Structure formats: C-alpha cells, structure tokens
Image (cartoon, rainbow, N blue to C red; front, side):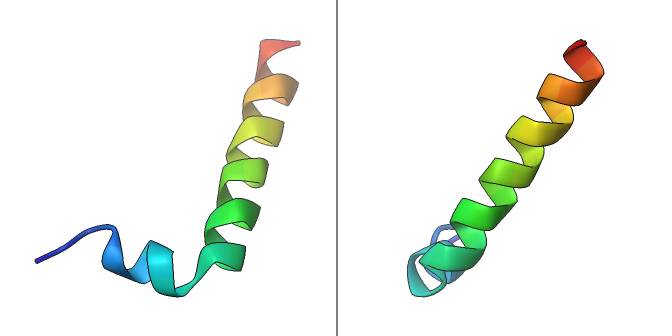
Length: 30
C-alpha cells in the first residue's frame, strides 16, 4: 500500500490540504 499514490494523482487536493494545515497552525500560533 503506497500512501503517496493518492497525493500524486491529486496534487491540487494535496496543496489545498497543506495550505489549510498551515493556516490552522498560524491561527492557533497567534
């Protein structure tokens, strides 16, 4: 089972997910 396979096939979803995580981190850091 390759965990990175769905992220390679859906790069846009991966970028959006990482952006959301960074946004949550920035908000909680403040």
